[in-house]
Image (cartoon, rainbow, N blue to C red; front, side):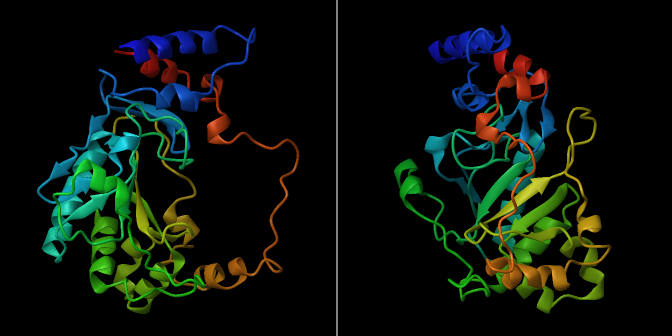
Length: 296
């Protein structure tokens, strides 16, 4: 209750004008310990938004455990929670004990105090590459255990940790119509492309290469139907894949030119540097985020 009063005070300061520096949105949203008592809603974009009426993924279930509970990031739109529970059942069917589920969103979404730029509207979730050996880890054990990388040190190939079960799990996730795209380490996408068939195009194009995703894969759902304030990511995976499966020269770029600084120098932004999510104030977010933050 004290934390909510403090948040309400800081929010009032944020909306009162430029008399003093506005508090950062990451601190306001990071201070919330529970979801709002509202109808489920995802507001804005994956990297600039918030969410109301979020559901909490139970800490443990018959086929999953939520990890790093001290972060309080096991929240999301109810559609995300349902998806994760469904996928954990699929993991059981392909031979895993279930899933270790990493960061989703904060109780009311919004920018985070550390880590992700996205995960702000309750439609993103990180799923560990580590197949669970047990699903009775204590809260403390979930802070200490780490996932495993499926990528070699030179970032060009998968390791022996990558298995057919990983590929089957990613395929099952991509086949779900709720899913917009899935970010994986590029060598994992390359490995999946080696066995691709023409009929795989529609789901395989959802598997998007992105470095930083070697110990987990990142599932991003589409905006649920009936939510007007939510913006599904653009360009679409079909556009990014030029209507194909994404198993082309653009994929090879990630394990060649991308890894060679001389051929891939950092791009210097033109004009004023844009704000990062951790620099956002409430004025940078959709207007309805203020009501979500102050709601019971």
